Each structure stands twice: as C-alpha cells, then as structure tokens.
Length: 206
Image 1 (cartoon, rainbow, N blue to C red):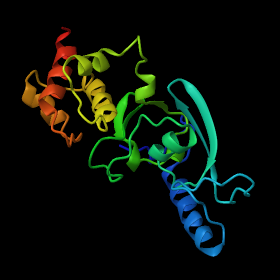
Image 2 (cartoon, rainbow, N blue to C red):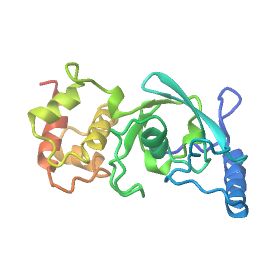
Image 3 (cartoon, rainbow, N blue to C red):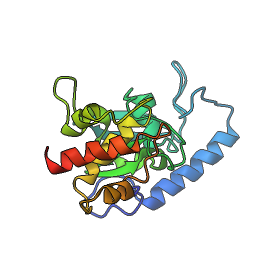
C-alpha cells in the first residue's frame, strides 16, 4: 500500500529506484561519518549541519503543506509525529501489525509506520486531526463516543481512521463483515463489540 512504484510522467515525487538508491547512500553515509542524531527519526539538532544524504519531503497533510529536510529512512509515522507534531497518530508495534498508526493517503487507509515519508510527495494525507474537531466531530468519532468504542484510547485514532475508510470499501452488511475488514486494527482492551456497533451506526445512518 506504500507509494514506492514509479510515479509516471504526470506524478511528481520520487520513484522506487531513486528512493532505494538514496536509502543505500544514507546507510553508507551514516556508517562513514561521525554525525549522530539523538532522536528516532534522525532529524538534525539545532546548530547541526544537515547531512548531505538528507532529502526534502513536501507533504500535504490535512489540507496544509509541510516541508522538511529528513533522513530518507524516516517513516510517514515519524514525520507526522516528530516533524509536524501531529501526535494523534499513534506508534504501536511499529511493524504494521496493530493498526494504531492508520492514516489516509489519497482516501485509502495505510499503516504509516510501513511507508516512507519521502515517497508521498504530492499525496493528500489525512490524520485523525483532520477528520473532525471538538464541536464538529466526524460522524464516526461521534459514534465511537455514543457506543464507548474505546477504553485506554491508544488504538482509537487508528480504529476511527480505518472505520471511516471502510465506509468507501466493499463490505457486506453484517457485523462479521465489519470485523473482517477491521481485522488489521487491534484493541488490546477488547472493545471490539462496541467498535463494530459504532461503525454499523454510521453505515446505517442512524
């Protein structure tokens, strides 16, 4: 689901070969120099020179344009949380297995921990912060409140983003159909029954 394929003549951004070549150079440079970043995604600290292998990522997130020099290995998840301070998207397993980091790219849901930020030049990214606001909630957010579709809340943003995406995906009418399409989102508290009820409320328009 990541955007690593050739973009084509009508698409701006990096193609797969360029990204892989840049990643290779980044690995060599990181091992050959004494430069070291103190945070997870490798952003330079104040006063530090930006390493030569960094790339400029230009992303449109929740309707706003963002640009930042980043290590090409930076995931979309880390870009959202560390570079633009949109921390509603959660880092759970960091291996694409829990769904806590789910966001929408051009209307489709993806696990942002598995996608490189630099490959999303020109894409439209929506996070939980862009879905609704207090006093103007998205119907899915309101339904989660109505049905207590959360307990600790850590997985909730990913659950809601997947639930919203499901509205535009082929899905049968039953609860089992919803559970199948939501199977990539784990709730360690076990609020699955309430989550399904919230999604069904929105699907049925009640």
